[in-house]
Image (cartoon, rainbow, N blue to C red; front, side):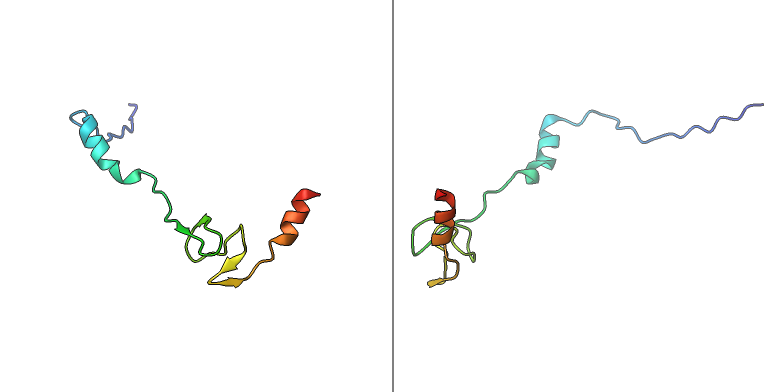
Length: 74
């Protein structure tokens, strides 16, 4: 006699409603990153990072941005 190995899987008894599904997925939304104004140039940047426009961090020039501007012009 031939023996079949059948596995039974859990099947939901009722359809999951749209409301219930959307409540479960409510935490999957994307968030906008917090932005602050650069005190030197006013550009919107992420906090605790060097400003890509002026190259300042905490009132000090950390990155020389004038060489980048010259490279773009050439």
